[in-house]
Length: 160
Image (cartoon, rainbow, N blue to C red; front, side, top):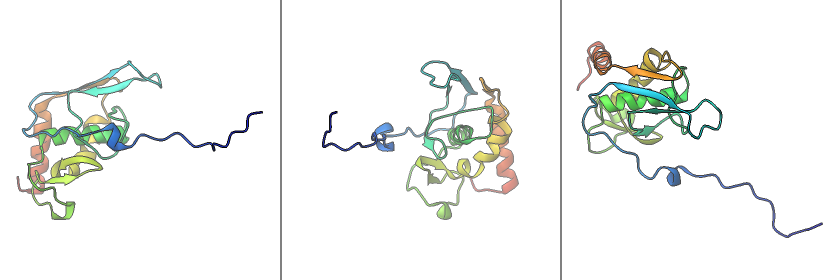
């Protein structure tokens, strides 16, 4: 029997800093249809990995990435990033939520920066567009997203 003096220690977890050096940031509103699909490559749970033509610019709910077809944390982050692409935060000082006044004021998320509008409306967007999407993915027309955004802005009388 081998008795070593080294104690057992749990494996070190990767931290956010080592996984994600710097998230990209949109500077112009996204103009294309949003496409979401599922890839089978490298799936450890046999359902695949969700991909999109929307860059992951911020993380608020799900460190595991995008998802679709149900109302969870992965779909919430997809919805947040879609709205963040269509209403990008302006460059400048990042404000706390309580200090933000304009739709495009940059507000911090768990990782990255989102526009005030995206952070305020992503849950509703998730339920109306992402949660009802097929689990294999789908397409959301850019015109539908812009109309949805305009409707929220008109209803709230927000400053753009």
